[in-house]
Length: 441
Image (tube, rainbow, N blue to C red; front, side, top):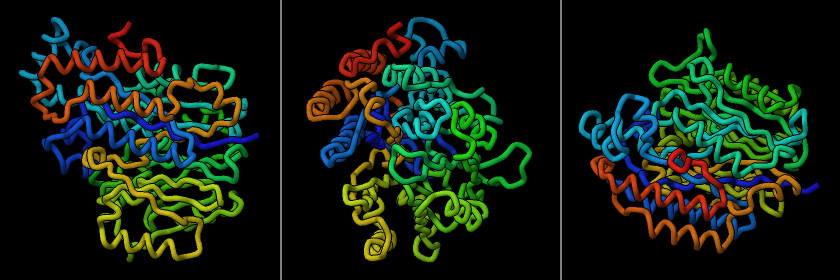
């Protein structure tokens, strides 16, 4: 049976702004208080989706969340009409308003962890929503993420959607950004590698920045997703690279089928891990980038590994990169040398994702990979699948509702709240999602 890796890309939200909320994400903190362009950000993401769809890849859309998150502000004791709540928070706690207005749900690699049906004990596709409890501005995403995923994958015969893990540090879960799958054809059983940053009571952990993913969370997600225990590997991320800004594994490694493209210093006891993968993945092909060619710091700056590794019709692979990798002489030189070597990567595809990159997310952050066979793909809500009509419709939607300039001070504008709700109400109609947002219920 045919199967494909479908990329579900996050659509950038209307409140996309630079607030430096993500400690440990150096791009996020570096661009704090700069002026953002939500309209451009959304269009840059749509262009990537459409280009990959035109190239023959299965591509779909995940909508943004409602922001500012007024129900969360009410939970924190602010009262009055929704507009009054926003006004009070803007006056009394502007940084709090910024946090509840974050558009970080655009990085749907953190939305959930996915197990294809070929790997699960019950033969269904499973998705476990991430709790993202390491950061306040992201920890409130889970309920809407779950509602959205249920609207996109509605048929319980094919799909199992699981709620987020408990909101405690022991079960910190950051979703597919710390998950890799290896194997041959997408529809065949594979090996899933869950990457964690720390273990409860463990000694190996970063000193400067937080390790957001725990071993305990990864183990729980593997159980919830009904992954065959014989098809699971747990690997620890190198705490030293976390301290250099590698806040998720997808900032230091990316996989596709039998290939792992990673930095030489990505994992604890990396040699043993690669040997384990070689023993379990037929044709396993590691591509280790030496520190002598690309430092961890340069990898973080350029998001070299926060790329998409996509299979081509001829069996080779294309690496989808942010423009920052092309602009860096050393990184671009290494990549062109890589093309000349004997490995599956045969093409480099560069996209301008500056708006997302300045907030700390590249091509891989913007997409959630879901392997689907023919009946499973047919059971997906068809309105979210990218095509020419949807691309035009969403661009027109962005033109109508999005601002081309946004600062933290603009978040206090009550009109922004009204614009956002009107836009999302229309978006749920375009994508036939039903009432997935709190303001619609």
